Length: 414
Image (tube, rainbow, N blue to C red; front, side, top):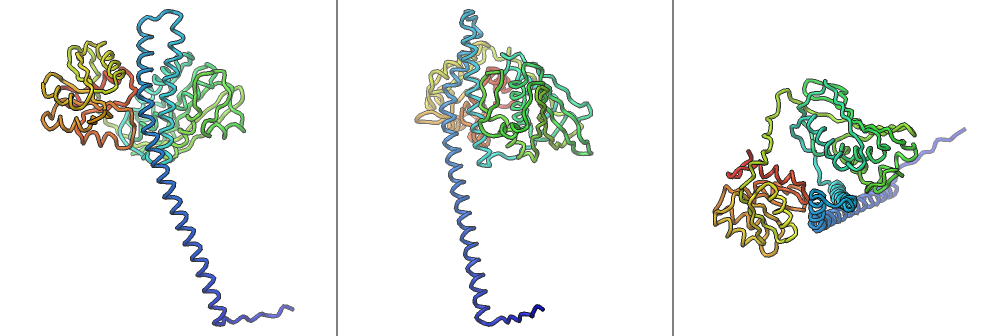
């Protein structure tokens, strides 16, 4: 027989209970404050780390711009047969270093929560085709073909984040090409559901390589982890890590299906808005119109200056070198130039300061910022300073031609 126990709450017991709860409350508050303090410290560390990486990337990109441009120029100028392979290796190595810098900085931005979900209109077929061309150019040495299949029921005019989608597809395609045993790689874009105002789309990147073991599928998503491949090309092992991080921002995830000696399928699902009316078509750049135009090239780095001038002279553009901001202001005042290419980081007077002073007496001449620094809201800052356009170094020749051809002498895009 169990006897009932009668416990009465005495003042002493009540006091003890209140004391215990008070101590627990103090401990909880202390832990919360400590956690918040650690969070702030980590946030400051991330900010400093991102600032350091941004500055370092600028210092690395500047000489890399010279290496990529010169190696490409040498390849285009009928090199000796014995030199071609060496120049191709040099070009691939420099392109790999540029990608590694960009990937590392992108991961830092993701860690620091500096990337947001951006929405804009784009054409699906154009984006996929552009991504395919970009990757085929990067893997030209491997002779891998990319085959595109887009579900015809998907609206072509989508509203979403084309930049992140492009980054995801490029990284997945590069990965598939590397491990696909030189067999064709497929981009399969399939409609999951199409509603009145939005559609759910599944993107699949498929290769027919050696496949990935089940126990290795988690490992390849970690920083710098690489599996063995017959393709001994350059690779950082960051591609899939970036894909997973970007998909998380887009509220999606990467699904891996693979069979040994059969191949692999990497897929993800995204939600897009869409419109039925066509996007205003951009005018195709007419590079012949650049012949005879006068451009002032402002850069304190002699190597960058020479490369930019040589690139423009291929199309018959008249150029003049300029070494600093003060000199640029005087030359623009002379009225001899139709456009200015302005480096941002120069001693004594920065490109931004020089541009602001130019805008005080000339509001129309197009001024394009050339910069190796990639930071959040950079274009918003530069446009307020009076810049008409912006180009990140190192850039492709065609990117430079396009931005110049798209600007008329009134400083507006045509």
